[in-house]
Amino acid sequence: EGDFHEALNFAGVWHVPIVFVVQNNQWAISVPLKKQTHSRTLAQKALAYGFPGIQVDGNDVLAVYAASREAVDRARAGGGPTLVECVTYRLGVHTTADDPTKYRSEEEVQAWERKDPLTRFSAYLEKKNLLQSGLEQQVDDEIARAVEAFEATPPADPLAIFDHAYVEMPPHLQAERAEMAERLRGGAGRRADEEVPPPSPPMRGQRRTSRWQN
Image 1 (cartoon, rainbow, N blue to C red):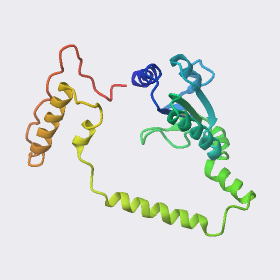
Image 2 (image 1 turned 180 degrees about the horizontal axis):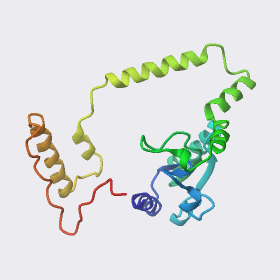
Image 3 (image 1 turned 135 degrees about the horizontal axis):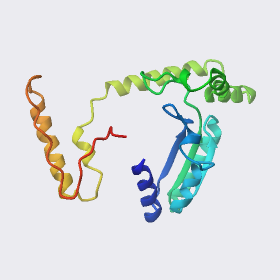
Image 4 (image 1 turned 120 degrees about the vertical axis):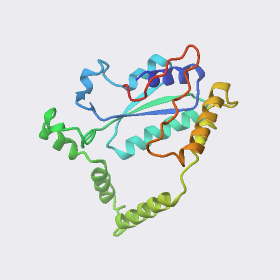
């Protein structure tokens, strides 16, 4: 989408320390990758914006770690951005209204199921005698505790989304923040049948669009 290419362009122009990670799962709902781009890889698109891109096996935990570590180290050392393309597969449905059996074969899905990253990494650890008895249960327990801690955390302040977009908040963003603050104050006691006030008109030269259009 447009914001993706714009982000890559700005990152290249300003040489910012950022790592872009593309999860290439082969499908955009029912459209395969080969009908979306003629490029051999998605990683090579970074070259057009003046910084390196690398394609890795997204189902190989160690390959993803190595590529990510190199990209992060480059960014921290002042080397600018990197794009990491992780080639994987969307095993499940795209949405609850999606039926992937209509556009891909069961054989294709089964082939990718055999490349499951957890199964592959477990086999690697077992071969290296690094997978100790009970470790999997310990990891499951740790994840469960982390989920419980997250669910017990109070929700973030919605206004915080405005706080770190700019060093100095521009006037139009200040106006949007004030509008949201007013809506948050008035929304708590609003009746279900009460008319919601319309959003403020767009600024001159801007066109209001829905984020769901695409």
